[in-house]
Length: 409
View 1 (cartoon, one colour):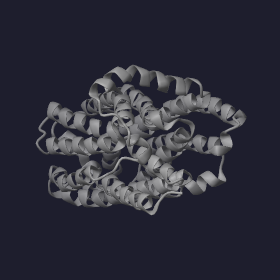
View 2: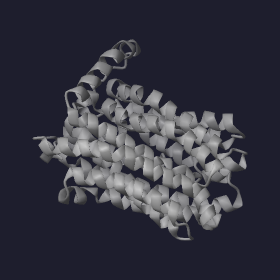
View 3: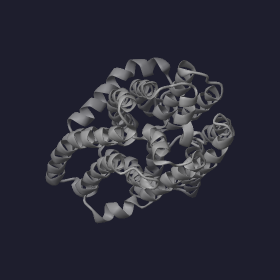
View 4: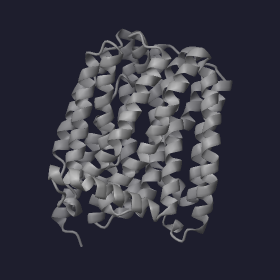
């Protein structure tokens, strides 16, 4: 039975992780960042190209960062993630064009790559050390819930700040992401991961072995492979619409001062979806939930293209439900199916697939939006997503139905 000191350490680290996770993405500029890019002279093609390069950087960094977390420790990885985010935001404060924006985006890509997988692996390992791993979906859902609410509050203020000056929304982020960095430095490595190596030479030499371990972890678990493929499809097609939301608001007639409120409402919906995912999980089979993710993602995009009016933005709430469910649902499956020593690496592979597909999609979508309309682009996203997602779900549904471990999910 874990000691009281261990339980206290667990509580301390949960609080610090909550602070880091809540403040590291306090982005006042997010509701108007596309307008900020356009104000600096970027076309939709250039905006999507910027995000495509961002995604490619994520693809290149995703697995090494997961391996880094497995070998050097979750704490160091989360600390470097918060530092990279801080540097990216500071660079954004002085950005004047495509290449300076690209430099800032690459640091933020580094942050997301390192944070992805490491935060949930950090939490899962601490809970497992206290024999509470079954509580992961609820506790991680709560972490996402509160961090999403904080991000939503920042975005409300972001809309009002943007009405004064778009760049001020970025300046306002700096103190919050700095505090997130300080909180990360105070984390403690999970007990069952405290013997992580900090040998750079070993990191280099073990990369191939870790790749092999991840490869065989996926190869021997057919369901895990299809889960990762399906997660990538859901992620990429849900993300694809994000950079079209703000131009869509303009088309729908929403004033910029309300952009922050609208984006904050997205955060609230996503937060509550994540918070109560465990309730949905208890009532529905895994394959049913996974089917709902692709139908909500693509159905909402198609409807956004065909119905454009002042309140049609409410259809984006369906995207936010998917966003709230996505990380908890897929991470829970992965966490239960892989060993701790490769857990963060496999979680990184999960994100890698979605980023790679997104990198391929976004320049095409940006070009399409410049040549045709934002509304037509949403329809293309929805139809293409269904064509890609439904066949994969059918395969996964069949495999889940014959898996003897399916009840564990």
